[in-house]
Length: 117
Image 1: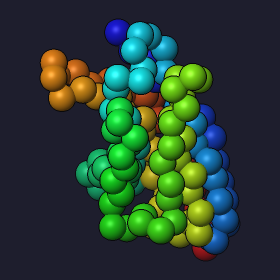
Image 2: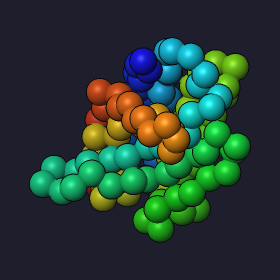
Image 3: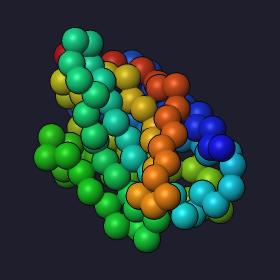
Image 4: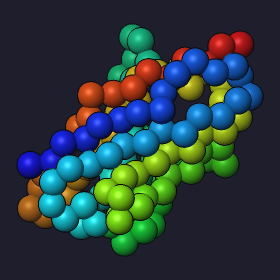
């Protein structure tokens, strides 16, 4: 079982920065792929960024060049550095741990990010 706890959300002006953290409990964090998703009011949840167990990363086109995902396996933590924030980045951000095989997925409770114009 894996428990994920996000932190770092808040209110920021457009153009500002925030860093989200997701602390994981449980075993074998380094074996898990980690991702950040977000869900804005009235919209479907969307994948923002992924960092695989091997270290490779993938970003949604909407955040490329502005967001950076990273992980510290010694601290069982994954981060999302968000720069040049826009009002359209406003959403609840969720941390996700997953494995392809055997398939498993775990979610955090979410943290609110609000970007004012």
